Image (cartoon, rainbow, N blue to C red; front, side, top):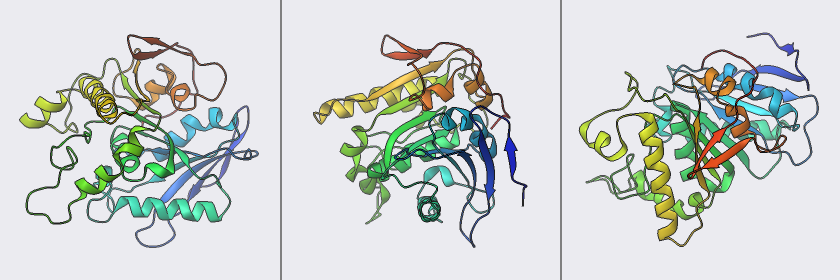
Length: 294
């Protein structure tokens, strides 16, 4: 078991590893402030396929501690959860995550009705699909550099919300059932301005490239536009924006250090450092807490 260590930060926080409680359960990294503020929702941050849960907890810890907010970074290990990004594939990553959150609630880590949810790359895929399925649990959603998205349209699940042919009880309609509530959430979509090169982890095929685009920047823009259109069609005022992170490619550390991702996610701290330009958000540059790649 990794040792518990006190990190030097201002305000202080403790980084702690919590082992999985049984087969099929999730481990997690926790970044806990010296005192959890009453009524402060936790930030849940979901790693990409590099499984950098510790790095994500560290990157958000200092800014969250300034709010008295705990950071929870679940760990979906490769062996048990190879396709956690799709939430409901086979072993049901959603149920394992819900069980972890229930255990952390019972131990006093968080007590609020909802939590803020963010994810990077593969974790962004998990985060937006989880929020679609359980919008009542999410206070605010931030997704960064997702490889691809589930769109609010009639493409078959998981590309859209329609049932796949020949499946009597497919997941698409279950996701579609909460779409109105999902579209009412404050949603921020972030992507590095240089994240334009598909890599071996980018899902690609002619149909998805045609509908979503060939790179993460294009896909982020199209998903934001699709959410806005879907909200408008339903008479819902859209609360979704796009943040293009300057000087960043597909690197979590750079998105925090150079792109200000921590300020995008934890926007409660201090003044709003972002400016709106043609419907997109561009954060001001400043130095954030450095950390490892995720």
